Image 1 (cartoon, rainbow, N blue to C red):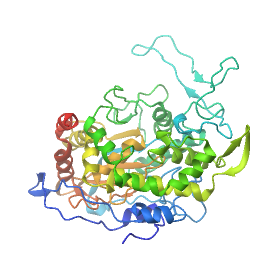
Image 2 (cartoon, rainbow, N blue to C red; image 1 turned 90 degrees about the horizontal axis):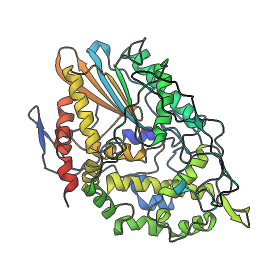
Image 3 (tube, rainbow, N blue to C red; image 1 turned 90 degrees about the vertical axis):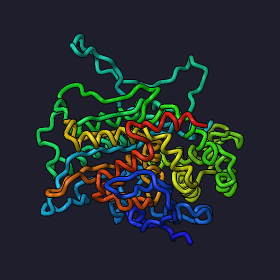
Image 4 (tube, helix red, strand yellow; image 1 turned 120 degrees about the vertical axis):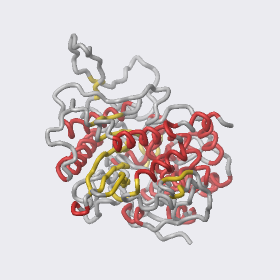
Length: 495
């Protein structure tokens, strides 16, 4: 029987694992068998379709602000500003036990933004203005320095002489863009990380220099990650001049990811969004009456596949409004807003359905979810494994790596880790890999933090990932993706 409505994200992380019976093996570490099989996530309200359709609220999750309501503890799922590592809740391993931090690598989703233009309605009931921030884009000669560039930013406008209306919301936003509030959340995220890894643990030096070579920051080819990274870098490093953000070529980027993996694409299209799988269509058919109401208010055609292959578009549209204290949309009739508006209860049902979809696509649909995630995100996982190896061997001076990515990055990573309770990673969702050493004990150990708490995997090899031997984690990764992602090209080309 599925569990009852879940009160907070913290409780989601700490539910006991629900393990499947399996006897497969795939690798060996320290003479211990490494289990590479898929194991199901916990049964919960999130993946119980009856509760999704007939329930109320959204499991105690917050969708209204980057700031939690009074009395709601930090660690609660807040779509607008997800919990992350910060000093107030961080659990420091006992120094008397001889633990010392050796390396940190983290990945998090960008912070809150406007909707994507594709997720907006044919006619929106109000505009969205972004005049309270600037999106800076310019080039400047380096190595050697030459003529200086002006600090130019985009100013979005429409022309009366241009007869074509813009797609998406009217106003002055370049859809999508990180909003001013999202920039502030990004800055605070950086300060919170600094408060743990510099001030609390003394892991990063007090005089951390942007040129020290001990830290690196990486972004995707989607500009919104650079908008976030600029705020994070300023909060953590306060560089006096230009600072490099690592980025891979758009055609092969492993962080977003953008490299081609036909096998992963085919798997997702077989059982997930856009598929005709009865298991996928079950929730869409059950939500037919909700779709009819939303389509009637928004003006979206019932034949619009983008809005009807999943609840992604409606979810993004409605959640972005609520995160920025904007009203839920109303039907536009003869150019005027009517009183026929999306209700909070209807928005909540959209959010429950969105959570259900992410759980299904990345965890609950079965072994396909692990296979697809390995193809989609195996290269980045192999890069992470290489970084951990280099840190353990002392062959790299970098001790802190910071990756700013997307929900489409964090989700397959959680699928590979087989997180025991899958949720849709909200704005700023963070996974941290910490590598520790223990005095008098050979080797290194890893703990993984998801939303600031210890991640629990349904896979018995990983379990509660708290000081798991590095060799175990590396054997698990290598068994799935291969050293240097050696398994991925063949996997992605197979049919």
